[in-house]
Amino acid sequence: MAAALLGERLRGVPELVPVESAGLLAEGFAADKSACQAMAGLGHDITTHASRRLTAEAVAAAELVVGMERLHVREAVVMAPEAFPRCFTLRELVRRGRAVGPRRPDQPVRHWLAQLAEGRTHADLLGESAIDDIDDPMGMPASVFRSLAAELDELTAAFAALVAGG
Image 1 (cartoon, helix red, strand yellow):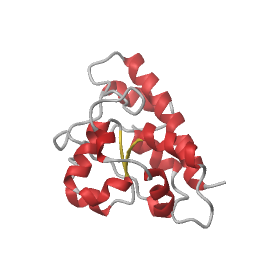
Image 2 (spheres, rainbow, N blue to C red):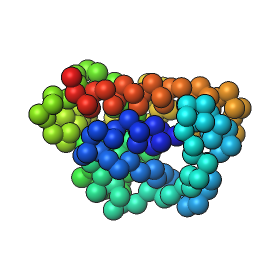
Image 3 (tube, rainbow, N blue to C red):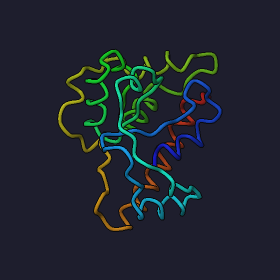
């Protein structure tokens, strides 16, 4: 869901395109029916989405790795420790971006992300966080997926505005 929204919103940021979706599930699972319906309500068709397993190579090569939960970010950092400064939960990314301020037009994305990562430690990824984690809605009612889609829409819009600069 987030990848579809980010892919659309980040078209003007060459350093972060293309946006790819990968996670901790096995390969080949289709998007949940409720997720498809929630995203259709936002004008996105994710019916052809199939899960892909995150790899160390993908993490190492990515300019930015965005997880929904600290667990996802921890797994990415275990796979490619050097990527830690570029691995965030979506909520953390927006929260830190708002604190630092928008990227300057002449500032490389990598440098802005490094600013966002300043002061973080690996210990910041331990445990769960009501502030940073977005719970997986699998098995929940359609209304939970709609709420999640709305939250992801807001968060991806906020991140896109921050990274686009101002």
